[in-house]
Amino acid sequence: MKIKHNIIFLTVTALLIISCGKKETPAEKPEVKTEKAEAGHEEGPQTIASLTEEQMKSVGISLGTVEMKELTSTIKANGLLRVPNNNKATVTSLYGGVIKTLNVQVGSLVKKGQVIATIANPEFIQLQEEYLNANSRITYAEQEYRRQRELFDNDAGAKKNLQSADAELKTLRTRRASLLRQLQMMGISPGKVNNSNMRSGLVITAPISGTVSSISAQIGSYVDVSSPVAEIIDNNSIHLDLQVFEKDLPRMKIGQIVHFKLTNNPETEYDAMVYSVGSSFENESKTVSVHGTVTGNKAGLIDGMNITGIVSLDKNTTPAVPTEAIVEADGKYYVFIRTDKKAEEHEEEASGDGEKNKAAAGESPKHQEKMVNFEKVEVVKGTSDMGYTAITPVSAIPADARIVVKGAFFVNAKLSNSGGHEH
Image (cartoon, rainbow, N blue to C red; front, side, top):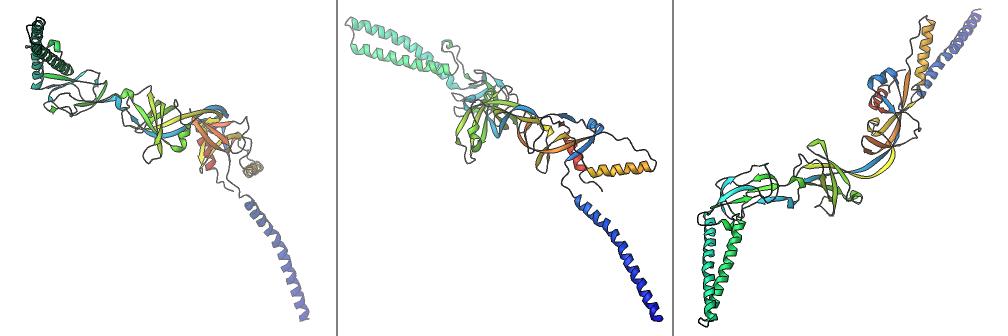
């Protein structure tokens, strides 16, 4: 009897164990589904950004289309501003002397022939004295020559005396011509030289028109032919020397337009035109000098300034968008196009379930704002000109696609912020 009770107890225990095992099995299945769902929800980078019309209005997002633009391809190069040597001058004196006056300062604008300084030297008086003496002796020599000619013609004088008088007259005339030219070079008019009007000084004039860049002399200092008094530069003849690399040289041509800015003042843009392309490399830099004449505004340009130039090449008609429509992310470039694609399907389902739960609980669903979706499309940047940039889409963009042309930065920021959603 006791054995029979034990058998019944064991049988009931076994049935309970089997029963429990069957109930636990269904409980495990949802966990598997959840894991599969979570595994399936691991997706790539998000490419759809959603904004409300109110958000678009607040940040100033504007839409446009891909346009066909005639853009100019360019070459960027660095260089210097230069003034040709024939537009630079060193002011010197043809004769030595002591500086008596200086009539200019650094930065003064001067014209060709303008008096820069005056110098004094007793030797100047001596030259004028010799000129007056030469005139007097020539007067006597001419008279003597005529007298000897008359004597010789009347067989009363020797031919030797006539020849001597002729030689003396020619020598004096040569000496007078030399002194006359020296006085003219000194700025002294020979016709005005007399015993009561001898000048002890002479003037130093500007050989070219331009700006005084430096002054080497001072009042009281002695200058000679080898001592510069000042330097003048004509900045109106300034040009630029661009250093172009070998690979870009075949695309350089005479007549091309160069837009350049000063390295230390990038606010103002200047223009130049290429007039010469070098034919040899500069030192060991493997660059060739390309020379351009500065056109238009030259205010503030000085010899030796560093510049950055953009050389305009051939124009091409290509698909383009405003430059601000392109955003950069992870080393790639993108534009945003308006799309009917949804950002996240599971989010919509979750929000739909929430609304159903609220409705079941007796709550009224909130008013849904209209959402506008934008898809991020990768593009390859091309030439930029006049605020537009050429693009080549990696994947096709519909011809009638509406593109974010203003405010693309905010759309990209919205996309980045919504990249990590919660489940």
